Image 1 (cartoon, rainbow, N blue to C red):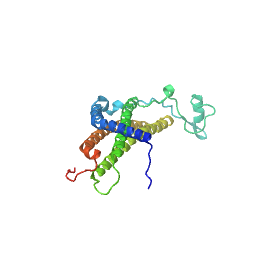
Image 2 (spheres, helix red, strand yellow; image 1 turned 45 degrees about the vertical axis):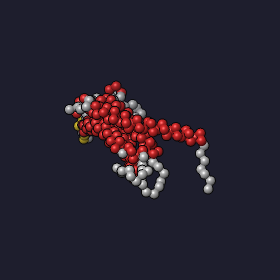
Image 3 (cartoon, rainbow, N blue to C red; image 1 turned 90 degrees about the vertical axis):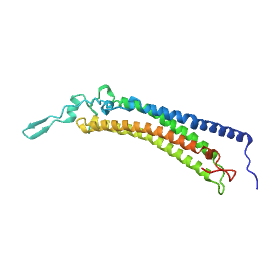
Image 4 (cartoon, helix red, strand yellow; image 1 turned 60 degrees about the vertical axis):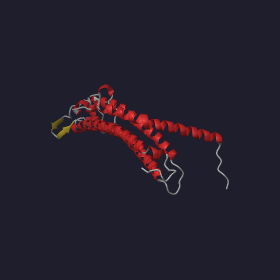
Length: 257
């Protein structure tokens, strides 16, 4: 049976990569994770995440509510003023406008986002991305430590696999936080579009306020979860570091965890 040949130069580069990943991952677990969890814990105590009255994070929509359509009595019955004609007279619609709900005038020409929430989101998103990237590095490190498959003596390997599974779960949860932020912007944009078409409907405006409050609460929960995930990973890996680095014992006299 012929042996499997690997280019020495390429193998040396792969070994260098493994050493690089090992050094980076061990530094993350020993130094970065505890520092980051303390940093996020301080973030949770800042005033921006401890607003007592949620009205403070509300954002004015500044939609001009047009005058209602005037109904005039006539000898032939009730006459309704043509809304298309009325809008053209008020300068709200051009000659080539189509039938259907029209977007009314918006001061400044732009419906702005909730500035306070945007600022908070811009602080939270980098933290989410950092957690995903660091988990990926540590996960790669643990996977490279998994030995070849053998019968028996796999207790340490099961610990490695459990650690990889936990890291993968944290990655997935962090990615879902980014999806949640995107859904907030999309949902709010659709509601604001409704308001520009139906400015007389107060419930649409109230719904935007409710969505902003919900997103604020969600962002605080996200920061709390990020901190907790750093705590959990740091604790889990340190408690099992010997089995993670040396999954198979060489002597029956060594104690198992």
